[in-house]
Image (cartoon, rainbow over all chains, first blue to last red; front, side):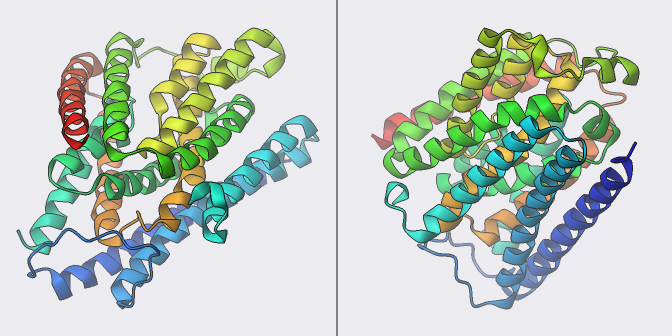
Length: 116
Length: 266
């Protein structure tokens, strides 16, 4: 099968991506608990945009972004596999899903009125 | 309560919901959000953390044998077009709906999930790899009505995913299991493939509005990840029937509690 190698590569990237993400979140979380663990817990107020100055929160944030990136890579591999298999109907659907996800992900950041 | 104690509490709750989510096949989000709100976490933060954990669980199970061999990418991709469209609509609704209404909708979805978990076919249904390959179908074998019904359910599932911060795996399994009549193992594996994508579509609005709070998301993400790992190991020797009954009862209690919270917030 010509897609077997590609699926192996995809699985390898997914595994590595999830591990990197978990590791980043674990490191950031540990530093956060080390620094602030004994402080009294206060329910944080919602702020409009996540812009954290503390390094540990940035690390956690990057961990969260990594997992989103891995999800995009997964969808990208699905598209490539459909291209190789010349299954253009499903390729079209996959690209549609990818486009919708990208729009849903980034539209709120560009102040598109319906999301405000 | 100190930050350390609060994080440990979030971690333990997430471990519990992750394990039970895998054992019952319902996913962790539907249980996680109401429990987190009970201990005082803001509903939006709870939903944001839940979405992150759904993506993590979906990806980490993608490389398991069940995720690879029982997942029907074609059916999943067709249905996912409806789910992401629904997620987009849900993101718009999230900006409009008040917390009270979200809580009430959540309580209704919880009741439905409890019912579907209770009446679900056995997870121990035996489906060999060869049978799975045969069942991994293409869409031509379905009538247009069945496809349209399945797709419409997915739009509904996508909307719920966005406004409630859950994977809406119960709706997805319902569409594949009841409408498209896919074997149970294929339905759950494909649903797992899809929930990650729907959650990614839903998360944009949560990120933009600051609903993903790292200090809450990190113990939840780690807990759900560990819980799901434990749950998948336990699946081999735990009888799921009695667990499903306990789980359904717990979900009913949480549903009543969410409904009460919703009424109180009006």
